[in-house]
Amino acid sequence: MRALQSLNERRSVPSRLLGEPGPSAAELESLIASAIRVPDHGKLTPWRLILIRGDQRRRLGELLVATQLRRNPETPPAVLDKDRQRFNFAPLIIAVVARVEENHPKIPAQEQLLSAGCVAYNLLLGAQALGYGAQWLTGWAAYDADIAAAFALAPGERIISFIHIGTASETAPERLRPAVADVTSEWTAPE
Ligand SMILES: Cc1cc2nc3c(=O)[nH]c(=O)nc-3n(C[C@H](O)[C@H](O)[C@H](O)COP(=O)(O)O)c2cc1C
Image 1: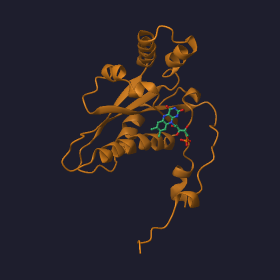
Image 2: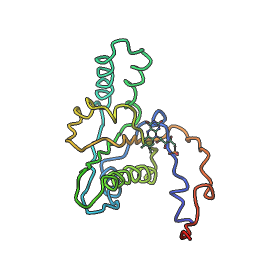
Image 3: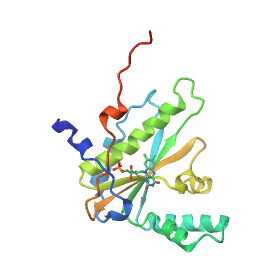
Image 4: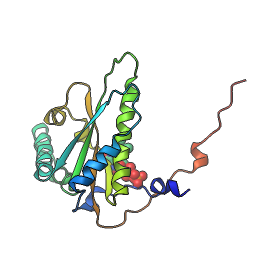
């Protein structure tokens, strides 16, 4: 049962509770190397990672604000402030990009997307194993065409997560988890 400890202890740390220090260069290299050991039907490597660090975090926030204002100059200041701050907490944000080939002859798009999801989840588990806190966030920016262009995403590519990683300033609250019995059933053959 001890082998399951890292899974049992996993929980997100809200990004606003994440700060310096983030992973060192060596830790980041190891974290990524471990996180990309995912199931990958067809060995397509249907994902890639984009690091957002240093002043680029502030610039991404400003890009979000500019995008909002271009679309709606009346955007409330509170909304703009939230967007401006979004990427300013954790020292490291890893955008996980799924590279989905919709009409692949053998591998359904869903399987490619799920492989990318495994990378994102491994980043959460790996960051925690290294002693950092992490949170998987999307928000509107992950689904926005203009932001996708700013990330130079190719057709078929999409951001599935911004994984925020840093040192937790406090212990994140645990939440109620679903009961095993509520989500598990036994398959029996139809008569
Ligand atoms: C695909 C995906 C996108 C998410 N996007 C957001 C988000 O934009 N904002 C947010 O507050 N939580 C988001 N979450 C939820 C958090 O990452 C986290 O799972 C949740 O706060 C529950 O905490 P836990 O991971 O400890 O169960 C997302 C989760 C997933 C799987």
